[in-house]
Length: 134
Image (cartoon, rainbow, N blue to C red; front, side):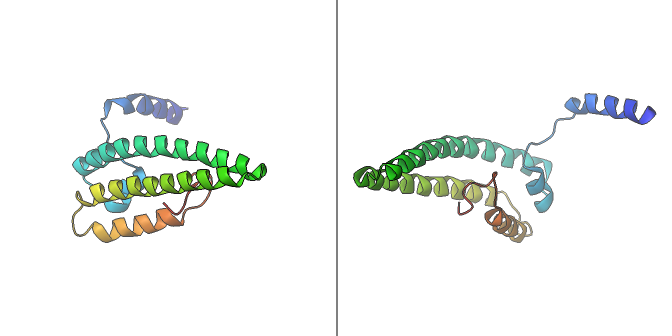
């Protein structure tokens, strides 16, 4: 019972400790300083908003492409395919821009760890990685 009470007290005080919001795996994988973590958080917040918006647009375009394929409407298929490809390139560009901005913050010792992190990110598959090639 004491442990539960102590846990509740500690968890209620957690909001008092300002913490950087950089991805926990990234922060721990690279041993980021508090300042680096804050800067990474700002970079990710900006880029991820852009990425999410563009991904939503692309998903809508992919739905249009699927409907055109089901209707066997070749003109619409080629148009939607071209737009979806352009958007995929834009998503890649946003991801690359985020990675480059983070790289500028890292020390030489952190660079190989970040490269390994990116490699691992690209290998992830599943519902959280709808486009592993980004």
